[in-house]
Image (cartoon, rainbow, N blue to C red; front, side, top):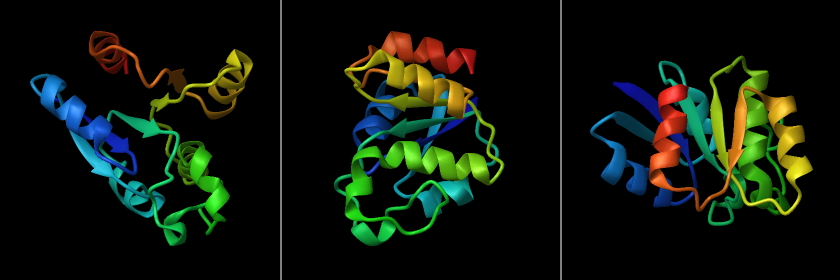
Length: 134
């Protein structure tokens, strides 16, 4: 069974995926870069939320994994992925983000690949298809 690391500040994704997709996949949850840096090995891929506004300021990181200001919370998923990539994590990733600008998603996918940016409202059957392909 493929195991995925869900990196989020809440429980929305991990609960939803665990409830509806656990017959086919297993999910582990990390709520910060520090947890993700320890947990990604052995996973088939990463599932990242973009916004970490509920996270304590002391746990926010910049793209190098160093402490970051509270303003970094709005793009914390991107910063966590960048920091993981700098530490050798080459796992495919899905970033749940709702960008108004499609070019931003394309730039991120090119820069941080293998990465696919998908809408946070994407359907479970579509997400399951992405997970099967990872």
